[in-house]
Length: 267
Image (cartoon, rainbow, N blue to C red; front, side, top):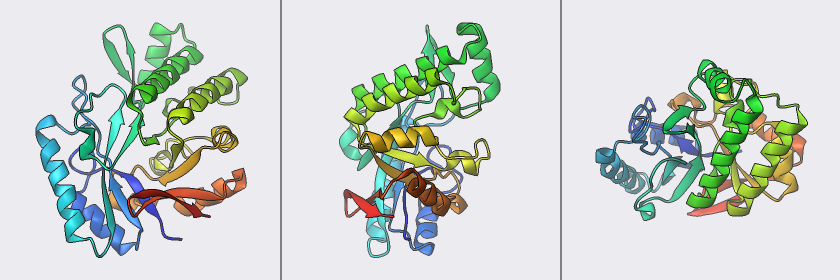
Protein backbone atom coordinates (compact mmCIF):
# COMPACT_ATOMS: atom_id res chain seq x y z
CA UNK A 1 0.00 0.00 0.00
CA UNK A 2 1.26 3.48 -0.83
CA UNK A 3 1.05 5.91 2.04
CA UNK A 4 0.71 9.61 2.67
CA UNK A 5 2.07 11.40 5.73
CA UNK A 6 0.92 14.97 6.30
CA UNK A 7 2.18 15.34 9.87
CA UNK A 8 5.91 15.94 9.47
CA UNK A 9 8.33 18.34 11.10
CA UNK A 10 11.48 20.00 9.79
CA UNK A 11 14.27 22.28 10.93
CA UNK A 12 11.81 25.17 10.71
CA UNK A 13 10.44 23.97 14.06
CA UNK A 14 11.74 20.99 16.05
CA UNK A 15 12.48 18.48 13.29
CA UNK A 16 15.99 17.20 12.48
CA UNK A 17 15.94 17.49 8.68
CA UNK A 18 15.22 20.09 6.04
CA UNK A 19 12.00 20.00 4.02
CA UNK A 20 13.92 18.89 0.93
CA UNK A 21 15.51 15.99 2.80
CA UNK A 22 12.02 14.90 3.83
CA UNK A 23 10.79 15.18 0.24
CA UNK A 24 13.65 13.05 -1.08
CA UNK A 25 12.91 10.38 1.52
CA UNK A 26 9.21 10.36 0.58
CA UNK A 27 10.11 10.00 -3.10
CA UNK A 28 12.47 7.16 -2.25
CA UNK A 29 9.62 5.41 -0.44
CA UNK A 30 7.23 5.95 -3.37
CA UNK A 31 4.73 7.76 -1.16
CA UNK A 32 1.57 9.35 -2.52
CA UNK A 33 2.05 12.65 -0.75
CA UNK A 34 3.82 14.46 2.03
CA UNK A 35 2.53 17.37 4.03
CA UNK A 36 4.64 19.66 6.17
CA UNK A 37 3.14 20.65 9.51
CA UNK A 38 5.76 22.46 11.51
CA UNK A 39 4.66 23.74 14.91
CA UNK A 40 2.93 27.08 15.23
CA UNK A 41 4.52 29.86 17.22
CA UNK A 42 3.66 30.11 20.91
CA UNK A 43 4.87 33.35 22.43
CA UNK A 44 5.00 31.85 25.94
CA UNK A 45 7.16 28.86 24.88
CA UNK A 46 9.82 29.39 22.22
CA UNK A 47 11.25 25.87 22.17
CA UNK A 48 9.18 24.27 19.44
CA UNK A 49 7.39 26.58 17.02
CA UNK A 50 8.29 28.49 13.88
CA UNK A 51 9.49 31.96 14.82
CA UNK A 52 7.38 34.69 13.17
CA UNK A 53 10.39 35.98 11.26
CA UNK A 54 10.80 32.53 9.67
CA UNK A 55 7.21 31.98 8.56
CA UNK A 56 7.69 33.55 5.13
CA UNK A 57 10.79 31.43 4.52
CA UNK A 58 8.89 28.28 5.54
CA UNK A 59 6.05 29.02 3.15
CA UNK A 60 8.42 29.99 0.36
CA UNK A 61 10.51 26.81 0.74
CA UNK A 62 7.56 24.41 0.66
CA UNK A 63 6.09 26.19 -2.38
CA UNK A 64 9.50 25.96 -4.08
CA UNK A 65 9.63 22.22 -3.44
CA UNK A 66 6.11 21.80 -4.79
CA UNK A 67 7.25 23.20 -8.11
CA UNK A 68 10.61 21.44 -8.18
CA UNK A 69 9.22 17.97 -7.48
CA UNK A 70 5.75 18.30 -9.01
CA UNK A 71 6.35 15.31 -11.30
CA UNK A 72 7.61 13.08 -8.47
CA UNK A 73 5.49 13.71 -5.39
CA UNK A 74 2.47 15.63 -4.13
CA UNK A 75 3.68 18.14 -1.55
CA UNK A 76 1.44 20.15 0.75
CA UNK A 77 2.00 23.09 3.06
CA UNK A 78 0.40 22.71 6.45
CA UNK A 79 0.75 23.87 10.02
CA UNK A 80 0.36 22.11 13.34
CA UNK A 81 -1.65 24.73 15.17
CA UNK A 82 -1.54 24.65 18.94
CA UNK A 83 -4.75 25.81 20.53
CA UNK A 84 -3.03 28.70 22.25
CA UNK A 85 -1.34 30.02 19.10
CA UNK A 86 -2.67 32.95 17.14
CA UNK A 87 -3.15 32.08 13.48
CA UNK A 88 -2.95 34.87 10.96
CA UNK A 89 -3.15 34.40 7.20
CA UNK A 90 -4.72 30.95 7.29
CA UNK A 91 -4.99 31.17 3.52
CA UNK A 92 -1.24 30.60 3.31
CA UNK A 93 -1.70 26.94 4.18
CA UNK A 94 -3.22 23.95 2.40
CA UNK A 95 -4.46 22.46 5.68
CA UNK A 96 -4.29 22.90 9.44
CA UNK A 97 -3.80 20.22 12.09
CA UNK A 98 -5.37 21.39 15.32
CA UNK A 99 -4.27 20.14 18.71
CA UNK A 100 -3.36 21.17 22.23
CA UNK A 101 0.06 20.85 23.89
CA UNK A 102 -0.72 22.93 26.98
CA UNK A 103 -3.22 23.64 29.68
CA UNK A 104 -3.45 27.10 31.19
CA UNK A 105 -3.94 27.71 34.89
CA UNK A 106 -4.19 31.35 35.82
CA UNK A 107 -1.50 33.09 33.80
CA UNK A 108 0.73 30.00 33.53
CA UNK A 109 0.97 27.49 30.70
CA UNK A 110 1.94 23.88 31.40
CA UNK A 111 3.00 21.43 28.72
CA UNK A 112 1.02 18.23 28.47
CA UNK A 113 3.64 16.25 26.57
CA UNK A 114 7.03 17.38 27.89
CA UNK A 115 7.44 14.88 30.74
CA UNK A 116 5.50 12.62 33.05
CA UNK A 117 7.17 14.35 35.97
CA UNK A 118 5.73 17.71 34.95
CA UNK A 119 2.28 16.18 34.48
CA UNK A 120 2.40 14.67 37.95
CA UNK A 121 3.58 17.91 39.53
CA UNK A 122 0.69 19.83 37.98
CA UNK A 123 -1.79 17.13 38.97
CA UNK A 124 -0.56 17.23 42.57
CA UNK A 125 -0.32 21.02 42.82
CA UNK A 126 -3.49 22.13 41.05
CA UNK A 127 -5.81 19.11 40.96
CA UNK A 128 -5.37 17.61 44.41
CA UNK A 129 -3.57 14.58 42.98
CA UNK A 130 -6.56 13.68 40.81
CA UNK A 131 -5.57 12.85 37.20
CA UNK A 132 -9.20 13.11 36.10
CA UNK A 133 -9.25 16.81 36.91
CA UNK A 134 -6.14 17.29 34.81
CA UNK A 135 -7.65 15.27 31.96
CA UNK A 136 -10.82 17.36 32.08
CA UNK A 137 -8.80 20.56 31.85
CA UNK A 138 -7.02 19.16 28.79
CA UNK A 139 -10.13 17.92 26.99
CA UNK A 140 -11.98 21.15 27.76
CA UNK A 141 -9.20 23.19 26.16
CA UNK A 142 -8.96 20.81 23.22
CA UNK A 143 -12.68 21.07 22.56
CA UNK A 144 -12.80 24.85 23.02
CA UNK A 145 -9.87 25.44 20.67
CA UNK A 146 -11.29 23.06 18.06
CA UNK A 147 -14.52 25.05 18.07
CA UNK A 148 -12.62 28.34 17.80
CA UNK A 149 -10.02 27.33 15.19
CA UNK A 150 -11.98 24.80 13.11
CA UNK A 151 -8.90 22.84 11.96
CA UNK A 152 -8.98 20.47 9.01
CA UNK A 153 -7.59 17.56 11.06
CA UNK A 154 -7.71 16.75 14.77
CA UNK A 155 -4.18 15.99 15.99
CA UNK A 156 -3.08 13.45 18.65
CA UNK A 157 -6.40 13.65 20.43
CA UNK A 158 -5.49 11.82 23.65
CA UNK A 159 -2.03 13.32 24.13
CA UNK A 160 -2.91 13.74 27.80
CA UNK A 161 -2.45 9.97 28.24
CA UNK A 162 1.10 10.02 26.86
CA UNK A 163 2.87 9.15 30.10
CA UNK A 164 0.44 6.58 31.49
CA UNK A 165 -0.87 8.73 34.34
CA UNK A 166 -4.49 8.47 33.19
CA UNK A 167 -6.58 5.42 34.07
CA UNK A 168 -7.74 4.71 30.52
CA UNK A 169 -9.86 1.80 31.74
CA UNK A 170 -12.00 3.94 34.03
CA UNK A 171 -15.50 4.79 32.88
CA UNK A 172 -15.07 8.37 34.08
CA UNK A 173 -12.05 8.95 31.86
CA UNK A 174 -13.64 7.16 28.91
CA UNK A 175 -16.88 9.12 29.17
CA UNK A 176 -14.95 12.38 29.39
CA UNK A 177 -12.84 11.56 26.33
CA UNK A 178 -15.87 10.38 24.35
CA UNK A 179 -17.85 13.54 25.12
CA UNK A 180 -14.97 15.73 23.96
CA UNK A 181 -14.42 13.60 20.88
CA UNK A 182 -18.05 13.81 19.76
CA UNK A 183 -18.03 17.59 20.14
CA UNK A 184 -14.82 17.88 18.12
CA UNK A 185 -15.98 15.53 15.36
CA UNK A 186 -18.99 17.78 14.84
CA UNK A 187 -16.51 20.50 13.85
CA UNK A 188 -13.84 18.39 12.15
CA UNK A 189 -14.63 14.85 10.95
CA UNK A 190 -10.99 13.99 10.16
CA UNK A 191 -8.84 12.77 13.04
CA UNK A 192 -5.32 11.49 12.84
CA UNK A 193 -4.07 8.13 14.03
CA UNK A 194 -0.60 9.15 15.11
CA UNK A 195 2.18 6.55 15.43
CA UNK A 196 4.63 9.02 16.96
CA UNK A 197 4.39 7.75 20.56
CA UNK A 198 5.22 4.21 19.44
CA UNK A 199 8.24 5.50 17.56
CA UNK A 200 9.41 7.44 20.62
CA UNK A 201 8.69 4.46 22.88
CA UNK A 202 6.40 6.30 25.25
CA UNK A 203 3.35 4.19 24.32
CA UNK A 204 2.79 0.78 22.79
CA UNK A 205 -0.13 1.98 20.66
CA UNK A 206 -0.73 5.11 18.54
CA UNK A 207 -2.89 8.07 19.50
CA UNK A 208 -5.78 7.67 19.96
CA UNK A 209 -6.13 4.44 21.89
CA UNK A 210 -8.49 1.64 20.88
CA UNK A 211 -11.62 2.68 22.79
CA UNK A 212 -11.43 6.12 21.20
CA UNK A 213 -10.95 4.55 17.76
CA UNK A 214 -14.20 2.66 18.34
CA UNK A 215 -15.95 5.91 19.26
CA UNK A 216 -14.61 7.57 16.11
CA UNK A 217 -15.99 4.74 14.01
CA UNK A 218 -19.32 4.79 15.81
CA UNK A 219 -19.77 8.53 15.26
CA UNK A 220 -18.77 8.66 11.62
CA UNK A 221 -15.28 10.07 11.99
CA UNK A 222 -12.62 9.46 9.34
CA UNK A 223 -9.03 8.60 10.22
CA UNK A 224 -5.85 10.04 8.73
CA UNK A 225 -2.68 7.99 9.21
CA UNK A 226 0.39 9.96 10.33
CA UNK A 227 3.71 9.38 12.05
CA UNK A 228 4.30 12.89 13.44
CA UNK A 229 7.81 12.37 12.11
CA UNK A 230 10.70 14.52 13.27
CA UNK A 231 13.24 12.34 11.43
CA UNK A 232 13.11 11.17 7.81
CA UNK A 233 13.59 7.52 8.80
CA UNK A 234 10.24 7.57 10.61
CA UNK A 235 8.19 8.79 7.67
CA UNK A 236 6.03 5.64 7.58
CA UNK A 237 6.80 4.29 11.04
CA UNK A 238 4.42 1.53 12.19
CA UNK A 239 2.01 2.25 9.33
CA UNK A 240 1.44 -1.36 8.24
CA UNK A 241 0.69 -2.50 11.78
CA UNK A 242 -1.57 0.48 12.37
CA UNK A 243 -3.59 -0.35 9.27
CA UNK A 244 -4.08 -3.84 10.69
CA UNK A 245 -5.15 -2.29 14.01
CA UNK A 246 -7.69 -0.10 12.23
CA UNK A 247 -9.06 -3.10 10.36
CA UNK A 248 -9.47 -5.00 13.63
CA UNK A 249 -11.51 -2.11 15.04
CA UNK A 250 -13.75 -2.13 11.96
CA UNK A 251 -12.43 0.63 9.73
CA UNK A 252 -12.67 -0.03 6.01
CA UNK A 253 -10.72 3.02 4.84
CA UNK A 254 -8.30 5.76 5.76
CA UNK A 255 -8.17 9.32 4.45
CA UNK A 256 -5.21 10.64 2.47
CA UNK A 257 -4.50 14.05 1.00
CA UNK A 258 -4.41 13.41 -2.74
CA UNK A 259 -4.81 15.84 -5.64
CA UNK A 260 -5.65 18.59 -3.20
CA UNK A 261 -8.55 16.73 -1.60
CA UNK A 262 -9.07 14.47 1.39
CA UNK A 263 -9.75 11.16 -0.28
CA UNK A 264 -10.90 7.89 1.29
CA UNK A 265 -8.65 4.92 0.47
CA UNK A 266 -9.80 1.37 1.07
CA UNK A 267 -7.63 -0.67 3.42
